[in-house]
Length: 180
Image 1 (tube, rainbow, N blue to C red):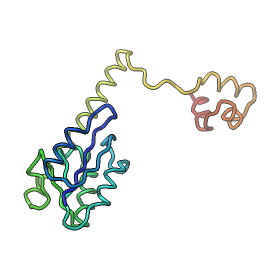
Image 2 (image 1 turned 90 degrees about the horizontal axis):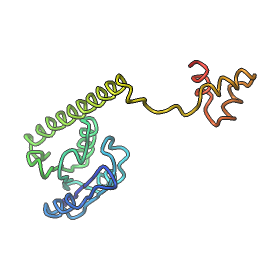
Image 3 (image 1 turned 45 degrees about the vertical axis):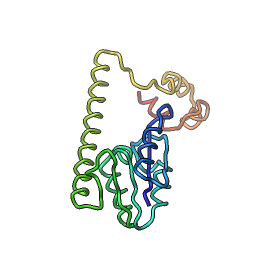
Image 4 (image 1 turned 180 degrees about the vertical axis):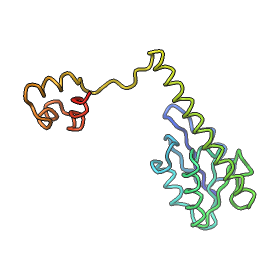
């Protein structure tokens, strides 16, 4: 049995193109979700698809990045499928097919490239944030509490626990504000 898995990252995106491609590929059942691909463990429909497939089945996706964004997640998923006797196939990257040794090699190479691209994207984002901070454009997340208010309460003789209760924050936040 061919079982499809489709994923888009946000609610505003459409699953239609992936669903159509999976149907054309002959998938008898398709699991689909709108969820970030950053981590495989939070994706309910992916887990449902993995739980559903049986020995002799093939899990099919349109592109490798629909299944996993990290090499660790990719290998974990493929290992899980292998242990169940389930093959994996990628429609748009036809060389990725775990039924062949060449396909398994291509899967490892493409997974490494995807992880590399993800690392590069993260580095560029961090560089952009650093440059924005230098220009004074990026301030980061604003503090959830006003440290001067915490210090004022402390000077009035309130203890950390009392300040935390009064401001509805954790004690660790009180100590950080006092240290600032």
